[in-house]
Image 1 (tube, rainbow, N blue to C red):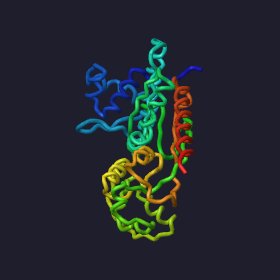
Image 2: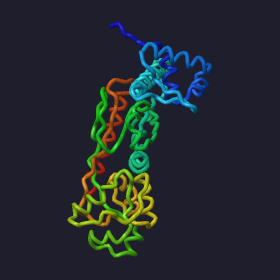
Image 3: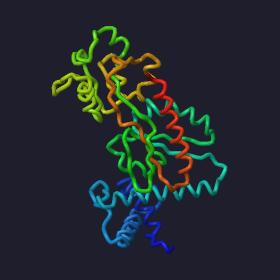
Image 4: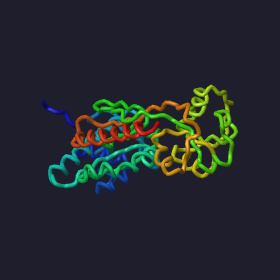
Length: 301
């Protein structure tokens, strides 16, 4: 099969310019001139038959139709670089790039990573985080994506690693100072909310058969782990996934308020590319994640 490929040098320049959103920064990275960047971009645009960037005073912006193209080009260049490194240095330590949300990284994945490193000592796990709203293009620089909802991409596989549920918690001091005997009692205290789960408290109260006002008391935080930190510091009640609570409950930094009701959560999912130099390692990592999830849900009653 004869592949019709665009100029590879132009692709490399395009990837750097799109990543930096700036021709000057791309020129500095690639050690070429600004005019050479512009020339290669024009060459690629002529080949494709449409513009790729909008030029602005402080840089450039990818046009909407070019965003998916950038994602695929970046991922392809990453795979070429990884495959070349493996071929040149077959005994070199392998690297697995894992991307997830800050809350999952801090509260669930990092406390368990040492177990994977013990099982596979020749692999370095490079962990990065990205907020939920930026997950659409996060796969370009990652081998495994982990998130609390299904992820669907062409040429990728999505695996459910963990069934999960949400429970209300507070610090031991807060529980000792306040009388919280029934679900309705929670409404008299600050209900800590994450911006990504504003409907969780209303759904939990509905599951318990308790009517709530349209405006719930309590602050809103950018990330779930900030809600948990606020709860640990006696600022109110948090409603969080069990997978994010295990370490803090085990250390008695937080305590569940009620055994029931439990609000079913979306679970934890992992996404990986089917055809890549590290697809086998990615699947090994995801299988390990699944065993951690089964162990966690199997020990809590």
